[in-house]
Length: 124
Image 1 (cartoon, rainbow, N blue to C red):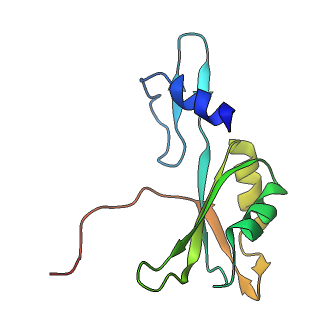
Image 2: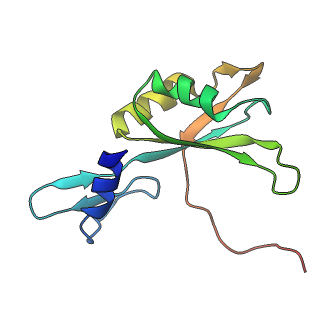
């Protein structure tokens, strides 16, 4: 955990051009600092837990965080999650190995997370 904290504090403030939304690279004076890659995991069984997902993804590399998305009102899982992995190569391997694999009787979808698009609906 301290390593993540150090990377955050020592991150230079000039982003490298041509980097996708789910991975960031910052070029420092001496070296390049590569931040973790965020993955979208969809079509999950509603019984899937953060610990269970962490165990599945850790087979492919170090996992920084797992966030199973829940309904605000009911607290029930919504069937998708985000997994953040430290190493880009490990994340790509997890995508190759786990996309369309079976978990709890369902074929899960695993791909690189996209930035959320703002705007659109809402109550009124």
